[in-house]
Amino acid sequence: MENYFNYFTEIEEQFLRRRGGGLLLTTLDWALIETWKDAGIPLEAVLRGIDAAFDRYDQRPSKSRKINSLAYCSQEVLAAAEDMKEAAVGASGEEHSSNKAEQGFEAETIVAFLRRNAELLDAAKLPYSAEPYVEAVARDSAAALRKIAQEIATNKALPKLEDLERRLTVLEEKLFAALLATTADEKLVAVRAHADRELAPYRIKMMAAQIEQLQKQYIHKFLLEKYGLPRLSLFYM
Image 1 (cartoon, rainbow, N blue to C red):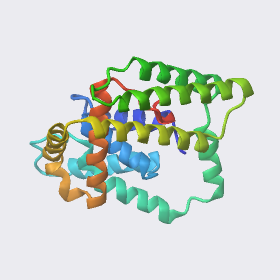
Image 2: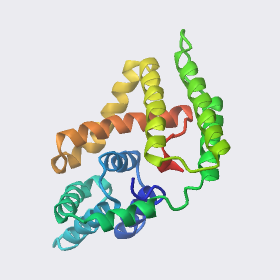
Image 3: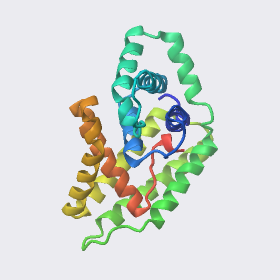
Image 4: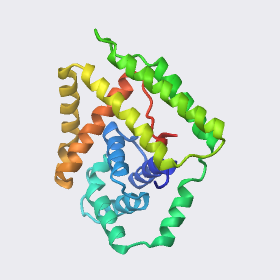
């Protein structure tokens, strides 16, 4: 996995720099970055796509409206990713990226991240339900994080990051499932409608699968923020 630390922050900085400052990224923007990350789109492709989108925008004779969302860059990002794929970077480039990805991922750093997230899960203000389903999932997830942290601390060695990320993804997916099951349908419908309104100007630039994934990520981000829950992925260290 490429550029754990930098993926989100570099995309944010690049977009705001090309935009000329102003507004911060929206919930929709962060959700879109997650869809690119989940799709395995390299950071370099995203940055190239942002530059290409702004370069094309700057060539327009009339620029009465500013670019307000990363969604405007979506087509160019996907095109850049396809160009990089066709270029077949080669084994040496892949090895360099792999080495770069693991910089800063000391065992102590990961242990601290896992234990901090366990504490946040314990402290979260979870939705009330007749069945303590969400609370049980959150407690089990916190216990699992502490167990993983203890394993790493005991071994004093960096685990294989891909394997660890899979374990964290499973925990996070269980948490999302529990939250979705206990959140009122009308609330989820309202959040999805809000996402649809924000997406409306950019739908023509996106594929159907990307729009569907973006809506899903938007709802997930809403639920996490509403209940003060952490993201468990190593991308959020």
